[in-house]
Length: 183
Image 1 (cartoon, rainbow, N blue to C red):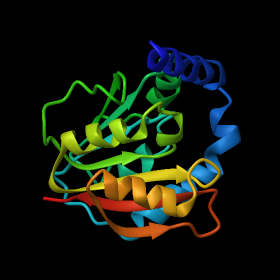
Image 2 (spheres, rainbow, N blue to C red; image 1 turned 90 degrees about the vertical axis):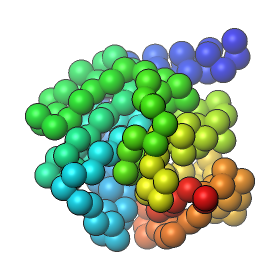
Image 3 (cartoon, helix red, strand yellow; image 1 turned 30 degrees about the horizontal axis):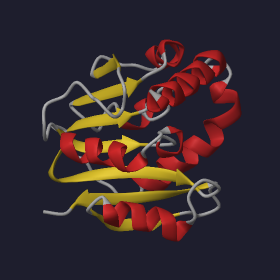
């Protein structure tokens, strides 16, 4: 019950701030997205999941790079904002990031920007991300420095059996990790 209450508080906060989210976080979020995308390539047939998609800030960067992009978030109001950025190949899903409605090994890439610090059990969230990622797929995850010191973040990724291929923090408030599942 404690986990649900935590998530309900987070959802309520995002529902209340949905219309002003971009004004507060657009610049920082776009900087994280650019840091991640500068080292990645995508084939046009790939399927991408934006877990905790928020207002869809990743969508314009990815809409021509992926065959299908799924934006998943728990907040109804934040998804209303994301819908404004959604193109034909972008699907929006309202669901819990710890219990996604997808089969195993569906996505070539999974993005989780500014998600882990909102989750009651980040290791559980990382397990779900791995479950829906294809073997050898890429997992791009961020962590706020104030919530996760560098070594704590890296240890959490290792404990979740993720190989860190790159870690960026150039003048960002958080770390951007490019990973892939072990084995």
